[in-house]
Amino acid sequence: MATQQNERKGSMSGAGQSATETAKEFASKAGNQAKDVASTVQQKAGDAASFVGQKAEDAAGAVGQRMQSAAGSIRRSGPQEGMLGNASSVLASTLENAGRELQEHGLSGVADDLTNMIRRHPVPSILIGIGVGFLLARTMTK
Image (tube, rainbow, N blue to C red):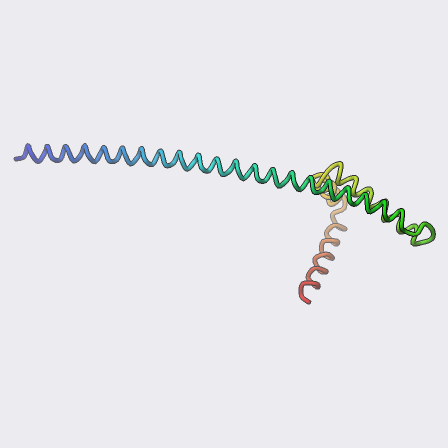
């Protein structure tokens, strides 16, 4: 009888080890599949971000072209003499330069230029930020 009990314990012990090994194998496969899914999701998210970034750069180029077109319209239809003539000329030149910058360098170039300007002039940049924040707060509370 003792021999039969030892045999039963041995067969149960073998079944327990087999179940443990099966569970470990299943967990390993599940972990690998989860890693594969996460890698695929990460790659798809990167592709989507790249696509959106490219579309934003393309849109910036189109906006730059429209800005240059608007500058030409201002030059043609605006006053040519006097104070208003000078103001329209300056406005047209500024629009044309900004449009050219957007077309040539895109949004990343504009962001780099803005970053460099803030580094060169930190105090005026902070004051401008505070002023813009104040104006936004006033418009939001009304």
